[in-house]
Length: 226
Ligand code: DC
Image (cartoon, rainbow, N blue to C red; front, side, top):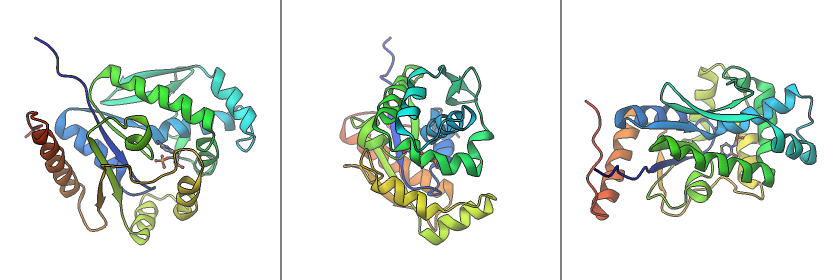
């Protein structure tokens, strides 16, 4: 029996647009793995901070990125990037790491390195991958592309509720205006404004769209676990 070809559900969008929680719920419903690509960029930013590398010095960041010791592993339904065998779950969420990450994320060599790593994730199976350029640049060949969005007020409120004080607007501006793979909806992506939707409603809508696209390609629908 031949195994079905692994596929990717690409979820892009700005900070606090609900990508993380939506990806995890959708992946759980469909029995797929999640990949948080923002965590990969954050891990590099954190690694720079602890190695005392100035994140504004592109050359030094590139040199570090070329030699850091990383591996991809699957843990609890997520594909994770480890550095020196360690996943810095807490450390990458600090305000220092959040401030540093947009700098490392705009470096072309870093983005190329991340692209290769993110594409490697498919070795583990079908994925729900969230980020900023998944549909446009990492897996442009996938049929399942979504761009999540919410109003600036709702996004700010969500971050505050998480106890994170962050200038979401400033980071979005940097992510959208950078030269390499700026944040924008990719061709063929369904734009979903979830300002007034629950996570479950958003996932149901996405699954409906995925199955519409599968039907158009003569593929069996995906079924949510009961
Ligand atoms: O989703 P997040 O807030 O954890 O992302 C952290 C940063 O990384 C954010 O400033 C944008 C950047 N990023 C990116 O440029 N491309 C991705 N695929 C994911 C994140």
